[in-house]
Length: 250
Image (cartoon, rainbow, N blue to C red; front, side, top):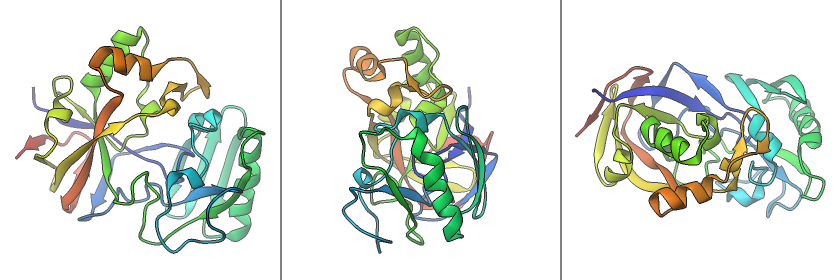
């Protein structure tokens, strides 16, 4: 079976909403366009105002600290972002507008735990995605690996638990991990597979409800002896990718 690109996902605001898209235009050494373009800093962040460069994830609202954030879905059209949550409802924002950025902070407050530093302000560093690593990797996961983990855990684990960018169908389980150090082609773009992705407690949360319902970390450990699922990839050659594209190991 030919391996193919099954899903392309982006997260316009770090940890706050996921959107599936049909295609994307990738650039060398850059993240998926509009992925983690913005982030929401909290009051205990190690900077004030707008930083000039990438900042570590502990400065921002994240699903590991606020599980209800995991249930947000997004739709993004340049700076216009619509967010939907089963309890908070729907909000549409112009992220280039200061007043709308403040509206976002207000909308998030009921979804954020009272015992955590409160949401403070929206951060954007032009040209720099607020991914978990300073290097703008693209995350790549395998549906067959997830199917094995779901079977082991005794429940279907939704792809949105994992905040991935690209999902592959047609590889045998853990093939992506075996490709670390190798190159692949998707569409007209090429990638180097760089390192595994070690998972955190945010993946225990059901993205449809915002409630923790599966010890995914224990399941990973007992199934494979580590807490990794998926790999980070670096874009070596920019190009177009689309759902259904064949994936070639170079």
